Length: 68
Image (cartoon, rainbow, N blue to C red; front, side):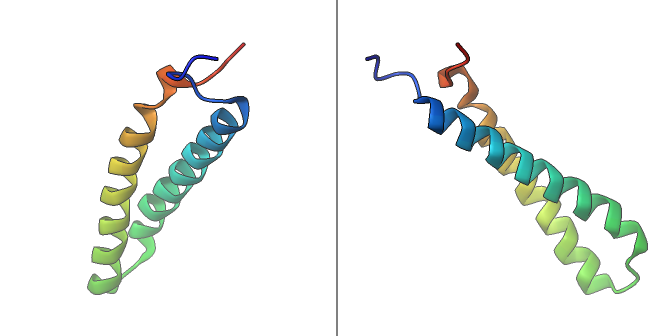
């Protein structure tokens, strides 16, 4: 077994995490237009920025995932 590749269940976990982070990003980004409280809007913007960083980090793992 190669050490550089993920197991199938790890690939599925990676996919699920990416879906979760992408949905959180979209929800925060869309809801910002509906929020009038500046503190809440700032928190939502922070969430967007953190989600972008998380997604980029997770995407770097894709070359190690099993697809076959």
